[in-house]
Image (tube, rainbow, N blue to C red):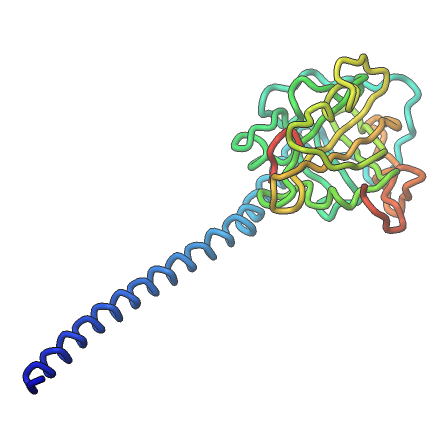
Length: 269
């Protein structure tokens, strides 16, 4: 092969190598850009949505207290013997109660009517399934919430165990329920929010409450379900129920003193 031919081949190889190297460089830059965008999305999804939701929920609770008046947190209200009052049917997407779950790190959050993601669960807190019972009624008060992102009001749902209190506060009363069981179901097992949980069509004779959230964390593959039974109610004007008093135990309606095991259906994270 003549020197001129060898030189031409080297020039062609150099050009091809240059093009290949340039393509690799562009691909690397694209991958780095996509990686950065993914990181930013995760920061927004896992952190910033919580920041915004926490701020919004704090404002909602403050607004409810302005409307209802401050409760005397230093006074333990006596349990009432008569039937509990039943709130009026809430307007769609409207916040009508505050929930207290002492076993949760985020122990207090708003409760709105409906389980729409954009109108309720992503912006207001927990959501009451329309058509299910209201506090004070026989049947099943069914409530959905996010387990991660958007305030993650049910982040600690897996921590609940038998006897732990779940409290619903309205303008007039506190309704105290105690956890009875936790189990995992598929998203199609909607009978968990039936008036008698697990027994659709059966007439209710007890007052129940059910929490639903996605399971496991960061997945919507299954649902974690917590059932609770009505224990007692107190008048809001009398103070707070003993379940919310500092140092309360599982036996008197407060958070259990010892650790234990825990055991949707709306699609919450």
